[in-house]
Image (cartoon, rainbow, N blue to C red; front, side, top):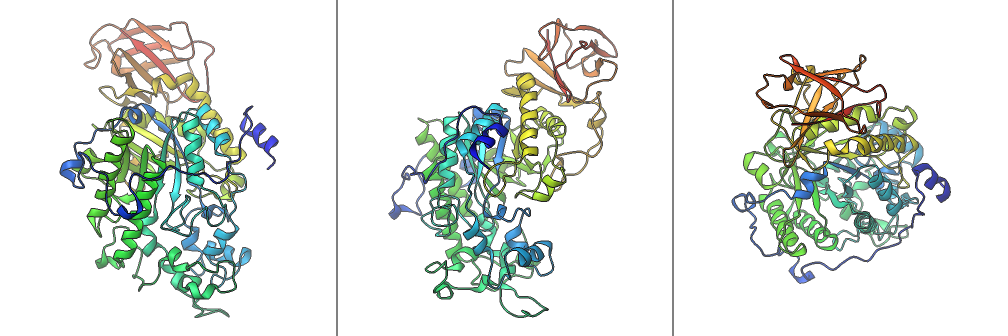
Amino acid sequence: MKRRSLIKLLGLSVPGVMLARQSVASGLLNPQSEDEIAGGPFAPDWDSLQRYEVPEWFRDAKFGIWAHWGPQCQPEHGDWYAREMYIEGSRDYKSHLAEYGHPSVKGFKDIIHQWKAADFNPDQLLSFYRENGAQYFMALANHHDNFDNFNSRYQPWNSVNLGPGKDLIGGWEKAARKHGLRFAVSVHASHTWSWYEPAQGADKSGPLAGVPYDGTMTKEDGRGKWWEGLDPQALYAQNHKPGKKLVWDWDPKQGSSLPDKAYQEKFFRRTKQLLDDYKPDMIYFDDDVLPLYEVDKAIGLKLAAHFYNSSLKWNMGNNQAVITGKHLNDIQKRSIVYDIERGKANGILPLPWQTDTCIGSWHYDRAIFENHSYKTASTVIPMLADIVSKNGNLMLSVPLQRGGMPDSDEIQIVKEIGEWLKVNGEAIYATRPWKIYGEGPSTKSSEKGQFDGQSDVQKKPFTAQDIRFTQSKDKSTLYAMVLRFPKDGKVTIRSLSGNSEHWPGQIRSVQMLGISQPLQFTRDTEGLHVTLPGKVPGKIAFALKIRS
């Protein structure tokens, strides 16, 4: 896509700057100290880590956007391509044969070679996200495919040496700082060991039956090829006997293989370098609790202590770091931030938490665009309101095409979310939960999430009776977000009835955000009855500002 048309599509007037390879700040520790962690008040154990306090920036931000973008976006066939392409008969196996060749010769290493990230323009894209309401931005540092999107000292299969030839995380970090966004990175590579095991396989039928896939190749196999001098085992990590199946918590009783010490040490050093060189505000681990926790608890605990102690040094004694993990117990929820993938909490949680979800597939899937089947803004906005009412944040992944830009449908969705936040953001940003999170039919039942909690998007549509509450930090203002516009122009808030235990005092004013004039209302034992103006801002949902 030409730059001029891209700028027009994004609706920006400032010309973007294509970032070449970025130099990054040196780490806290010298290479000789690669296994040491930063000193400070946090030790690598739960007793110490549970003294952590979630920084105010995260509690206030509420809404972030994620670029879950790497070489698996090159085929534009969706998530887990680098694994599924080695499973004979799968959709990705068939498309890989047709588009790239047989995985015994043309494997995922060759996808990396073709991925050039030709449209990578972080300055322009993050300006667009900031303009449309994002308060923090997260970039994929590596996925289960084991490719580092940064200038990695420990993983030669990285975006500086190969593919784009650019330090992608360095580019994202520079643009995030420029546009006033907190910067986050996501790390998924702890699971490569078992996730890539199908790459050791071979076809069971057909003309190449029994011919090993390229996951078994070694450095010697690269002589005379484009990847000469590189060891495929540094990418695939398959120099081991595969397990019987992929088990996320590494349980050998269920058939999982277990990674060796060299693999664990490499993961630790790569992640520590990522923290030291790019100094993110937040790191997301795609793991239960922490990386490799069921294999060696010390690895994730050392990374957590190192990040917290480092953040104290970077920020003049204020720990601004956020770590997220999944399926946490109560002590762990006090030590790192609880994350629910494609789900949300059932009610108000006492500590801040996060939903991570996507408007489509995690890695870009062109079929979703062609079928116009993304989550719409009218789906995302009520989800955001519900999450924030329960003390949570929403990290929303907007998949990027192979080149590094969203498609036209995604751009429109982000714009519509941004338009809503420009009017109603006061009820979202820098708010805190009220006494109850909401009322209406949707609070009486819940649909189970894919991984934990409630489903991020419920199948039963919200109604004008479904309301979510937040309040200002000083508790002087209540916000009632009505998740659908009523057809008759009237709203009843039953939790604010004249005999309400939640608001026993008077209500002196009710205002719709985006409308300067106060609204007419009455109050009785049935609730607070509000008459909406004839002309309202928006079509999806709205927020009422209520004061005593």
